[in-house]
Amino acid sequence: MPVRTESQREALQHAHRVAGRGSLIPADKNYDQQRCVYERETLRAGLSKAHGLRHEYAHRHYAALTGWEAPVRGGPSSRDLTVEQKRIDREVRLTISQELGHERTAVTAVYLGR
Image (tube, rainbow, N blue to C red; front, side):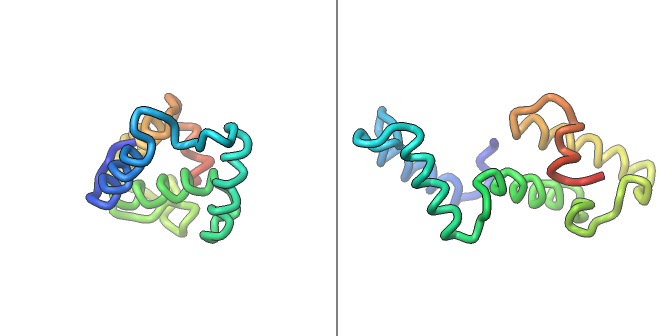
């Protein structure tokens, strides 16, 4: 995903300082153990599932790029968009799909709605 803000840049720089050339997973933990720590911390932060971070990113980025909320957030459905808005919607969905590691815009319907 693209780094868009100074706070994102600072978080990545901090992670790099902590990990150096190694892993962010402590030496005394394996991947599954660290995943459990991550899930526990995301729950403490009010996120019911870690995958929710991807949804939140998609929602915020969609609104930033289109100028309106995603349908799942109360924004207009595709049938309510103008021809120009539909073009923008398609382009933004493709961008978000690629940033999330997918090649199909159909995947964005799960995140953004129709």
